[in-house]
Image (tube, rainbow, N blue to C red; front, side, top):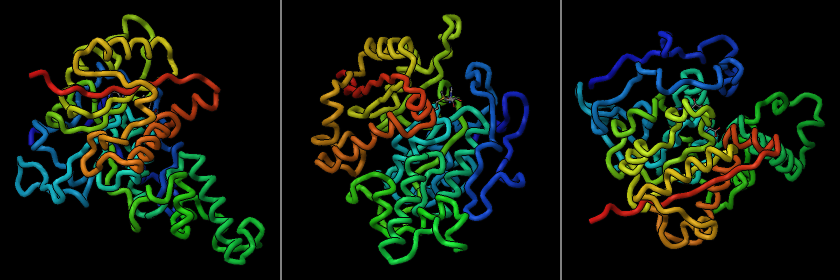
Length: 363
Ligand SMILES: C[S@@+](CC[C@H](N)C(=O)[O-])C[C@H]1O[C@@H](n2cnc3c(N)ncnc32)[C@H](O)[C@@H]1O
């Protein structure tokens, strides 16, 4: 399989922090973020000992997506693809995973992956996804809007059913319950409200986040080892580290050399998204992508109409009004569902985004 040992840059083994006492909610298994603290920046140029397959066909996806893949039949082989689906969305530098977890229920048959270089942060997202899988219908605990909506929807449902709202009751089983548990127990129609999407965009009953996972990886180095040519239909770069100083610009995740790799893994018609609150970085990213011959920038009007006609290259989705709604929800998640996006919003900072279509290879 040609794998390297999974080690932290400073020699620590990747540790399952969820095993630490108190690191997870005892009822839902949801991890508690304060147990996974790590310094804000990792230097992508100094982290060398990461796990990666020799080529995409040797990758074992079964541990990430057990409902889509079975373990490799023999040493040195890749996992067995059960549904003919491949990872289609990649969120590069996913941080705490807010984007992928928001998108997963919108595209329940599309495997998607967050790539993150920081070990503790990756572990946190992995533990969070595990807990979401164990509590179908639950919501991302880091998404304050969804958590508040879950609590509100539960209250309303109780009122309609003729009970007093949980908050007023003396001692009930609902009291002290986490938002995950509350959301997981909501009647079906209420779940759509919680997610803030049209009911038609709700995932099928029993949906349990089987199509989302996270991988510890240095996306500047090994992307073509994980994904084959044209495999991805969406590639996200949300609030990437700005690396302000000129001598650090080489660590920026968008650069002319790396754009060739991004164009390689993205299929023609696929979309590349950027967003940042750092104006200089926006100019840097759009400048470099704009000069790259295989990307074409979308106007805001084109962004607003995404999905209407083409389905945006996502497998299994034809262009339609509903697909347009879904693509609008993607843009909403890009702007507002990540940790950084929310932080910028809280500080009333500005955000600048761009969306690019991968053009067909020249003849
Ligand atoms: C500012 S955070 C943004 C996180 C997330 N996208 C968000 O919007 O909340 C940038 C993230 O990219 C990760 N990162 C930086 N370089 C990376 C690389 N080469 N490969 C994978 N992740 C990287 C960092 O560890 C950090 O979590």
